[in-house]
Every structure is written in C-alpha cells, then in structure tokens.
Length: 269
Ligand code: SF4
Image (cartoon, rainbow, N blue to C red; front, side, top):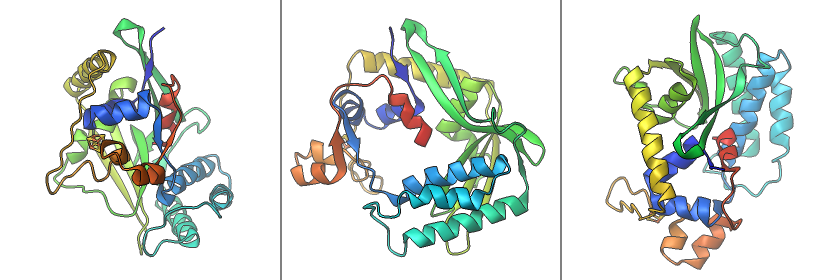
C-alpha cells in the first residue's frame, strides 16, 4: 500500500528536504509551546459552534480553558486572558459582519478530500469550509494571526500555495482566506481570489514530482542562511543540523518511525 501525503508534508519538503526527513522519517516533532497555535485551533472550533448556532463565546472559553496552565511561551504583551478577550471580540465582529454563510455546518466544515496518485499513494486534505462570502460560493480557509496579511497588489492571494492545493483537490476555482487578526483593535480580513485550471494542473505535477523525490530518498538540505530570509532560524530542526543538544531538548520530541497518519497534522494547520 502507498503512503498518505498532505499539503504540510509537501510544503515542508519544498522548504527543506532535510527537515522533511527529520520530521517524517526520523520522527522529530516540534513541541507545542506556541500559545498562538493552540489558540488558533480553539478559535476554529468556536467558529464551528457559531455556524451551528451554538454559543461560540462559551465554546471558545471551554476549548481555551484546557490550556489555562499549559507551559506556553507567550510573546511580549500576550496572556491567556488577553487571547480569550481578543477571541471573543473577533467572534462578535464576525457575527456583526455577517458576510460568511455556511449552508450545512455538519457537512461543509472540515471537509476531507482524497486523491489517489500514481504509484498508489494518496493525497489527503481537510478544507476548513465551503460556503459563501458576500453571496459568492468559494472554499474558505480560516487563519488566526497577530498581524495583518499583505493584501496588495490585488490578486496576490492567487499565488498562495495552500489555497492552490485546496483548489486542486476540490476542483473549486474561487478561494478565500478569512484572517482573524489579534491585535489591539481586532480586525477581520476577507480576502478572495480565483485559481486557474493551469495553476491546479501545475500543482498536481508538483505533488507528483515532489513525492517521487521523497520516495527516491532525496533529502539534501536547503539551508538558505543568507540575510534577510533565513529559513534555518525559524526551523524547528535547527538543533539537529547544528548538533546542539540544548536546542534539540528545547524544541523537539521524538516519536521514532514514519507514520502513515501524518496527514492528521493538516487538521491543525
Ligand atoms: S536547520 Fe536549515 S538545513 Fe537544517 S533542516 Fe532546518 S532548514 Fe534544513
């Protein structure tokens, strides 16, 4: 039987094949120390509650409460309470805007798509939602972030690889990103774009060629250490490349062996 691949895997390989090997073959995973990541998951679950006409503020509190005493690294100015406060504020603004409609929240949220690839492997993706923004049907990805996404020049979003991937696997041309910005005055960005048939086909080829390189065990490093875009600095596997035990212990945990369930990572992406 072939393996299951996800967008997270393909993009990690494209960023640095060595990092892919550490994560997916050797089992080195990043420890969950970032409050913002856990909060993003809680917030998306609260959005689900909103669309099911449940009390989304309560849902957010209950989800986030589980992390009350988690040993997170909070950035300067961030606290558990502040996250909650910003989240509630964003949910209220989202409800007030009323721009997004999900017809059937039981079917149209967290939708699984699968595509069988040549050589018997499969590609699995979970789309956050399929719905309407300002009356236009599109696939939707939610993001929570502490700073605004760049939204110019126009159509910049049509180059977003994750949205191209989702368009490819679902066949839906219209895509959107709804960005929940946790800042002093919380803001929501509703960004839309169209993905062309050519982009979808090109992504399909990229998936196939990337997987054939993975399966041919090509894991050379793409270190990219030049200023200002130094991918190694933000890479969780930096300690392994530098043989720095302190950094390894601080950032990583190891679950040896490759897992065929690694696409589950995409549920939290
Ligand atoms: S530290 Fe740099 S070279 Fe090493 S795995 Fe990460 S991105 Fe690749």
